[in-house]
Amino acid sequence: MIKRSFFGLVTPKLEYNRVPAPVKELPMPGKVVLFLKDSQNGGGAIAAKVGDTVRTGQRLAASPDSPDYVIASVTGTISALDSYLDAYGQKYTAISIDARGKDEWDAEFDNNKPTLDTAIRFFGFGPGTPSFTPFTDPEKRIRTIVINGMDQDLLLTVNQYVVQNEAADIKNGVQTLKKLTGIERIVIVAPENLVQQAGTTGAEVKVVSAAYPEGLPRMIIKNLFGTVVPAGDTLEDAGYFFLSAEAAAALGTAFSSGRLCVTKVVTVVGKDGKTTNVKTRIGTPVADVLKACNILLNDRDRLILGGPMRGMATYSEDLPVQPDTDGILVQDEAGSVEVTDYPCINCGECIRICPVNIPVNMLVRFLEAGLYEDAAAMYDLNCCIECGLCSYVCVSRIPIFQYIRLGKHELSLMETAEAAYE
Ligand code: SF4
Ligand code: SF4
Image (cartoon, rainbow, N blue to C red; front, side):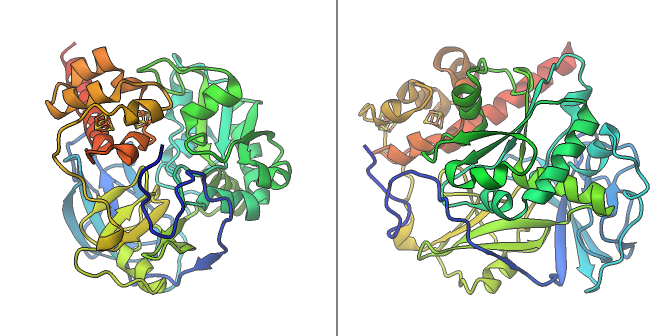
């Protein structure tokens, strides 16, 4: 039974929003900020320096062969290189670029042939951040590529908008994917109301239910392909490669036009629950997006990057729209549900709603105590599909979802450290 809604104006039916709002294209921002991760050097290395001029579509990295890079989304001058720590303490270099207002396109991408190597080198910082590296891993036998036309959270309509309005670009993306990977089976997953548009993309169409969280990849694989991905395995381990409809369209457009996609569609949800889709340059400060949508942030308002179930509250509207930012939500104090440090009362609501039957009441006790390995071994932490439903129904308002994300992150750090010693 659902006890709480996130927004006063949204009825708690827990169905995806299936009416994509038209997209409002925002003007080029005065400045963009791009976060460059450096997994090799522990954070921060970049070959460029303050004062350098960059062109739109230019690849910026520590070195030409570095796996970590960003793509400049405007033409302009690098005005600052700062350190940035994300919510999990991972280090980045925040590259600020003052935009000139007019694009001069970098030619490096256009000089590359459409190969897997090109896709790895240029699309990891595109919309949806698709990573093509699993195709180069001989241990992964990917047999099916799934283009997800459903959004990953309630209220968001980014991918549905793309299926509805950019099916021709997805069709180009389907052909490009076949060429890059040699894989013939490409499936597009879409809600029933977008089947007609999905059918024009040349991919096999599968219809996904509008009930949340049926659009999450592991639910799709289970319900539409009849495969359960074992705990701890990746989707690629099970033979599936997922990318968003927006990423597929960006791939198709880039290889047909010779220019990388440097924009992102974002669903903006205001305090009244009204949704607007905007298309803006990757790296645009959130403040610029809110201003364009006439949303004023007041003290004690809550700003969330992502959707209401899976998004992450943030502290600053100076943060940029990143390539995987599908939503920006603003809630006022009255509409925000505060988390608490009340203890679990064993009501069982979280267990009843969990789509993968995790004993969440026990899991949360181990996560609260920082016993992440035990949480994985005894209470199925790695089976969690990160839908956020347990947090949503918890009567004690325990931030279960945040504990789960932190637990998985800490476990992955432990595994990386262990692997380094082997
Ligand atoms: S987020 Fe909660 S409800 Fe969803 S799968 Fe994980 S434990 Fe279950
Ligand atoms: S974690 Fe929350 S929802 Fe789950 S049993 Fe405890 S109080 Fe109930």
